[in-house]
Image (cartoon, rainbow, N blue to C red):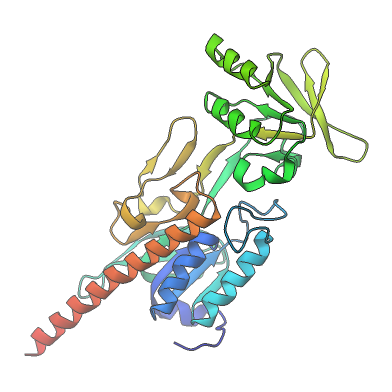
Length: 333
């Protein structure tokens, strides 16, 4: 491995079988690639350039990097992977599927990019992240990642003491409300048709949390385009500067259907890839890390999961390499 920054040459990659293709270049994917590249594995990261946290101005809750812009974290991560000989490719994966095994029976996979180029790899690490599916409410998506938030740990400190509205999406929004109550005394829970029993209402009252049962019909802006409040079905506008909402979380699975990976669906949360220890899946040779499997993981846990998966992939490749060397030695004897 060289310490120079390699460039992506389609012919070279197409002709060469690499150890690992990492699909997704966020915290999980880049940290997995870093572990693999530092282990002198040939690794190619394929990233479409659409990180989940792109709308956010800064990332929080990860020691040392707290407050850094998400794009800067990715820039540094790419640079560090490249300095150990890893490749980072700006491209979209259109298909990933098993390929015929090697002559010795080692696993093979084919990854096809949107421009038609293909890469053959021995193993795959999926770190595609997820998509936040917001309620269909006019004006909500326009403020996502700014004044429409989901995570009290990612953005809560920045909106402390402001008038916050919780837009309920189900029973999980109740605990979500208690978390945001830690950050402000001016909190309103908009039920949006979800049930609150008498005990829930008493608990809200005990914490000074107001409840609005009238449905919200749209998000209202002020003259400068900033979030100003929520319009109700009766025409009333309830002033708020921040809205917290738990979106449905759905792993990005497009193009990966050919791998036949099982999924799991945590109740009231969303859909992700199922995985076991260190991100191993039921499909031999395929690992998954980060939000693609752990739907609620922040940047820190996602990066850690990528490292664990990368180390496990390297371990399995080391065993396969040793088995192949032993087979060859015995054949020559």
